[in-house]
Image 1 (cartoon, rainbow, N blue to C red):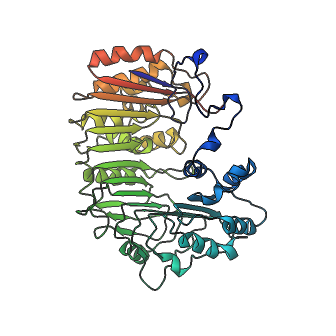
Image 2 (cartoon, one colour; image 1 turned 135 degrees about the horizontal axis):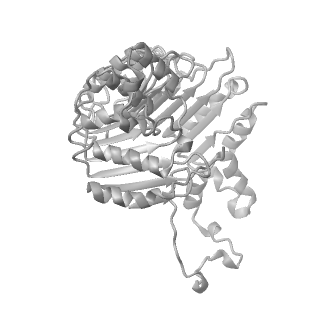
Image 3 (tube, rainbow, N blue to C red; image 1 turned 90 degrees about the vertical axis):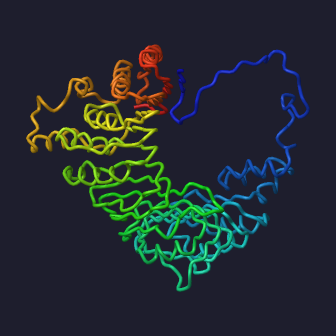
Length: 482
């Protein structure tokens, strides 16, 4: 099966045929100049407008009398546009004065610390008075200016999803009384200074929390979810934990999460230990790397191998390119890796000789593998070949003994130079190293206009028949020009 896609946003191109010349007009057909959409019920129109930024939804009020007040009763408000020069407080106040919906599903606000601080409390109180369910706040950086939400914000029975993004790493100030977000299921925090005590206070007030994302949150060293996010008798939802760290933000160095089912961890060269993830069913692992930093290869190998020991039982694994590169270094130094019970494996990497040994070792250590997915797209922030070669030189790994013949096929290969033969060779190698595989899915995102891989769809059926494996191929053309 070959599935070719025309754009780079993940949409599948579909060809359809219809009898255009024999079309019969139906009631409300706009082909005669009528406005069929205006005949739709308000609830449908408001649902459509809810998917738009509020400033655009409001502009529909000039279309006709029919549209004049439709926007004012939409269940969602999105003040997500940013005016870098000049306040927008009066504009939002006027919009809220005209807003008539009694129940609000979503409230999104992007605020800057220079102009909006005097107004934010009122905006939040307005949203909470309409029992808003999904709250999203973004605060831009403006030097020493700081904003803390009012204490009343931490008491809400309506919140189901809360997202807070702060670009200034300000402290998350909590009230003296307990937090009470009794309906909250999804919590996303970015660039917050969050101590263990504060994290514990928040989680104590979220009895039905299902998903927690900590995106570059500072000060939190030990994340202990052993008392929270546990599977209850009245809920069967998957418990999710997403953590992103880098060299500037340590984030949690210990993760105790025995009840979660999904973990996405973007690590760094700073220490991190998976203490308990015993209920984990799916995990995605990657390493954040900056070209300016040193490659702490020995430390990274030790940390990655210890994490893999905690992931041996996981059914669904995803490894990123830097993670696979670290495994390559371990393989070239003859350091063993554990065996896995993974059934579904995803590799997110460009095709390169620097990931081949690591991938091969993972496949050979996965005797129960049934499905393999490879995702190839241009990525920045990968460990550079110069740092890898320098490290191997220091380790005494001889240049003529580093790379196997199967890895040398991709020597000096850049993503924008990849051709059909390279992808086919990569696929053939993957199939050769697996014995129990039933299905392979390949996603390739072209980086430049001429990179079409036109011959690849013809090669795939041969590989499928030869290896008795079902192969699905997704080819994406670039949505930009270089």
